[in-house]
Length: 161
Ligand SMILES: CC(C)(COP(=O)(O)OP(=O)(O)OC[C@H]1O[C@@H](n2cnc3c(N)ncnc32)[C@H](O)[C@@H]1OP(=O)(O)O)[C@@H](O)C(=O)NCCC(=O)NCCS
Image (cartoon, rainbow, N blue to C red; front, side, top):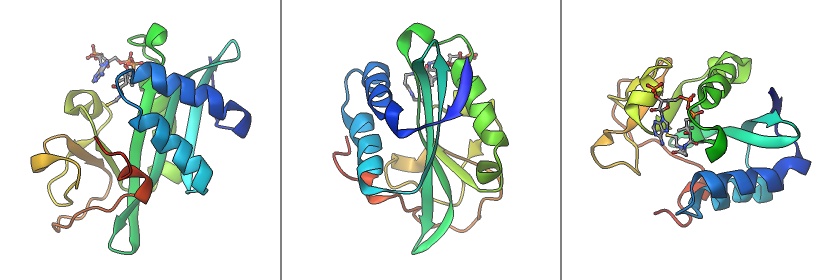
């Protein structure tokens, strides 16, 4: 298995992977396709296995008003046949070592048990606009203690569940 930056020829494979990993939702597919269509700045990596894309991770800007204040981790997905074999963890650990990522404050809206294993902690200050009571909103790195609603790229609001 190899971890590589996502390249344009693998865009269709990422869409297929996201549809398989989130079978009841079009949200994640549309989110990532909109990032690409709009040229939104994202950091993206994939796990490749025998020329298949079996995992995907993305980070996009987080905002405090007009200013970038970190990165949102979303989505992270592993193709169903390869889940629970350590691949999602390996891809996440790889991403967290990359300069573009590790120097930033990171935010994630996800399962706290999963993300706490990688050092994420419940986010006390910044508030997630998509999470009632911030229960699934975590951060990693230098997080402001001030309360403010964290901004997302506009693609996140389109078709929000
Ligand atoms: C969540 C996901 C990215 C984890 O990747 P993975 O390669 O399957 O996970 P790993 O093998 O590295 O790690 C396994 C751990 O993830 C946990 N896990 C598996 N699926 C999970 C899910 N949907 N939500 C939260 N945790 C999950 C397992 O309980 C396991 O925990 P343990 O080590 O304490 O037993 C992957 O299962 C996936 O794509 N699921 C469907 C899409 C999804 O829900 N993505 C959202 C991420 S919050």
